[in-house]
Length: 111
Length: 117
Image (cartoon, rainbow over all chains, first blue to last red; front, side):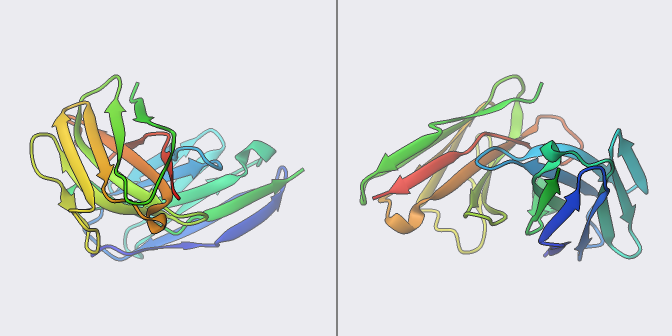
């Protein structure tokens, strides 16, 4: 089955700096890779996703890159702000429309 | 669009009782609903996949008689934790996929914090 690894587990950056979170997956059949942001006690919110037919997608300060050959994908947040502080989860699709989630990254943006 | 609600948001129950959690898609029809469990500072663990009108598919290690799932309509799925024990205390979150969607997009409910005393 699919296995998703996410690094780092915690990340502290200064406000205005960039943050990068990386994930690797094991199942070459996976073709959908979403990123979710979860604030404490709240629901995960989809912030960006990418499908296997593209290598990069950008939405304002957020971008995701996908390397299918290497089976890894990354989330890039530029010009970080304190409100970006949260837990970020990557996920990869697997059989039955299911998603397998990474372990999460706690992002702290220091002002 | 794509709003998912969950009720209740918090519930405290005594050991041995059963608790029902509802998950509703408010503005779309959900072909599939998923139930997750999340421990503090941990990732989302898929418990089961629920399709309207059919039996739920449980992940390995999840007791189907303990966690009863019913998906009676395209907008409602329920999770019943039967004979709850303190170790069942957790954050339970549902998600839903749109009917007819060709992607795997899942929209999450706000979660239910269950505490078993």
